[in-house]
Image (spheres, helix red, strand yellow):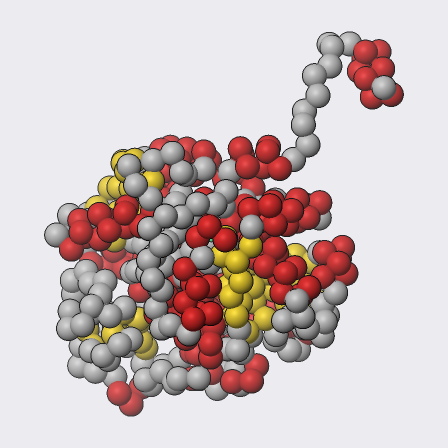
Length: 417
Ligand code: F0G
C-alpha cells in the first residue's frame, strides 16, 4: 500500500499543517489561498495532505469532528453529523452466511445521507476561502446537504440536477433549505461538466466530491467503523461493501485506511477489502476494475432505478481504483430487481434505505453466492441514504395500501376476508 508523505516533507505552501497534492504528478499547493479542484500542472485529482496522521488515541468528542486530528480544522458548521448506527441484522446475517454482518446506516445523518459528513468540512473550507456562493451537480443527496449546510452558514447555494431523474425527497430538501435549483436537460455527468465550468470561471465554489475536502469529511465513515469494531470485537472488519457512483466514498475510505497505516494505528494486513457495487445500467467502475484500467471510460448512456448512482463518469475513479486493488477488494454490478430485493430485506429488519443504498447488500449477496466473499468474513455494508429520500421507490417496493369503509365492523370484515 502506498505511503503518504509525512511530516518530514511538509512543503512551504502548507497552512495549519495542511496542503494539497496532485495524486498524479505530486505538485503541491496551498490549501486555502484560492479555490482549486484539479492540479494546475496536469489536471490530476488533488488530495489533502497533513503534517501528521491520526491514531485512535487522538480521537475525542462526537460525530465527524471527533476526527479533527485527521481533518483540516477543529470544528465547522455542524447539524451535527456522523455517529451513525452500525446495525445488527441477524436474519440477513444468517442468510448471507458470513461470520458477522453489520449495516452502517448513513441515512441517519441530519439530511439523510453521508453527504453531510463531507459538507460539514467542505463548508468550513468555503468559509476559510471567503467564497459567497456554493454549488454542486447532484443526483439529489449532495444538493440536499449543500442546501442545508450552506444555508446554515448563511451562504448562497446553487444546485444543478438532471431533470426528472432526482428522487422527490431530495428535490424537496434542496428547495426548502433555500437552494436555487436548476434542472438540466441531461444526466448527472453533464450537470457536473457545467458546474465545473462555472467553478473554473469563479462563479461558485464547487462542493462535489471532486473537491478534495469533501472526501476528508467522508473519511470519518471509515474511522467510525474501525473504532466500533476495535471496541466491540478487538479486531477490524475483513470487508466493507459500498454502493459506488462518483467513487468518492471508496476513495475516502481508502484514504482513511492509508492514514491509519501511515501513523502505525492499523497494520497493512488489517485493512478491510473495499468492495464497490454499481447498478448494471451504470457500471463504469466495474468495467474499469475488470479490464485492469487505471481510470474509467465514460458511459454516455446510464439508467437505473437507483437514481443516486445513475452516473457514467465517476470523477474519483483514479483515487478509488487503487483502493479496490490495493486492499484486495473487488467490484460487482447488480440489477434493479436485485437492488429492490435487498431494499426489502433491509426493510424487514427495520432498516429503511433508498435504492442505491441497498446495492451494497445486493452486491454482497451475489459475491457470497459466487464464493468471492468467504463464510469466515466480518462484513460491513454501507447504506448511504434514507428510505424517505425516494418515497416513490419505497412505495413501489412495499405492500399495497387497501381501501376500507369508514366503519369498524367493515374493517374487521375486510381483515377476515
Ligand atoms: N449512495 C447514495 C445514496 C448517493 O447519493 C451517492 C452519490 C452514492 C451512493 C455514491 O457515492 O459518489 O461516493 O460513489 N450521490 C451523489 C449526489 C452523486 O449527487 O448526491 P459516491
